[in-house]
Amino acid sequence: MNGMEMNMINAGHNKNNTAVKFGFVVLHYLALDATVECVESIYQCRDQEDQVEIVIVDNGSPNGTGQLLKTRYKDKPYVHVLLLENNIGFAKGNNEGFQFAKEQLGCSFICMLNNDVLLTQESFVQKCFEIYRQNPCAVIGPMVIRKDDSVQPPDKTIRSRNFYIFYRNILKIELILSRIGIDTVKLTEIVMRILKKKKHSDRCPVNIKYDVPLRNIVLHGCCWIFTPQFTEKFQGINNRTFLYREEELLYVLLKKYHMNTLYAPELKIYHMEDIATDMSVKTPKKKREFIYKNEIASLKILIEEMK
Image (cartoon, rainbow, N blue to C red; front, side):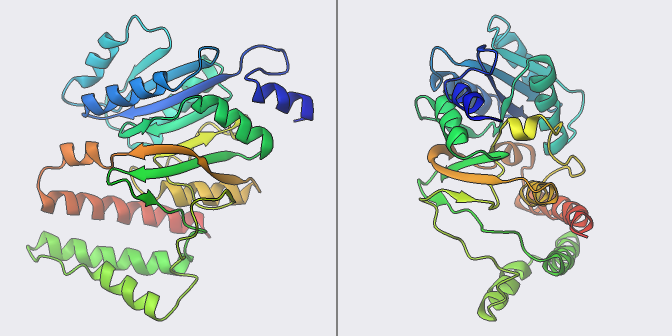
């Protein structure tokens, strides 16, 4: 992309001087109020001249909230609600929205945003254009602020393949213990403490400064801004997993194709965390086993992808 094209993107226009479309993909499951609040925050943070499209993907919500969203936004031409028959998982569900935004709506920037995320910054889209103009990259990640107002620090890199093999085995043990009614002693936490004491730097990346821009680090999966470098080449993220380890898999994919990420702390989002999981899994035991099962499955895929 030449300098003139980059300047046009910064102004919100492409090389044909038509407005660059910026798409938001919001994956919905069960939590109606959270999704509505997320969508409203997106629209309030756009500039009047922005060409913004919002794609809500209902991931087969059994409580009928997908249809409620479709009815709610039927008169909003910038909001598109896709109803999936079944819950196909985080990656595949988001990819349905990504492909719709790319192929049907012509979006060259696509932001995958959890439905438990809120935007509060004015001119969010224009800030993304400006960041991309100054630092061309494949994926941009914002500063993530938790509901207690603390910042989720980014990690510099992923852990070693051997660590993931080891970690997966620990989770298998915890799942077995939980299933037979033994309250786990948090083996993973104990193991992580031991590893840190032994200073296994390749296994335990140290959280790094989060108030300066950083290139080629692991970006938090609650908000990814895919730029034209990514959207022109791919149809979405790795869709082999149902839930968990999407961040590491994206990092592996980008490394494979020699593409860059950019952590941009001037972009800020608020993450309410795990609303859909908390609604769908009621008891602590069921939630714990839900996490274990999906982590184990996703770690198997990550280990394969890292070969």
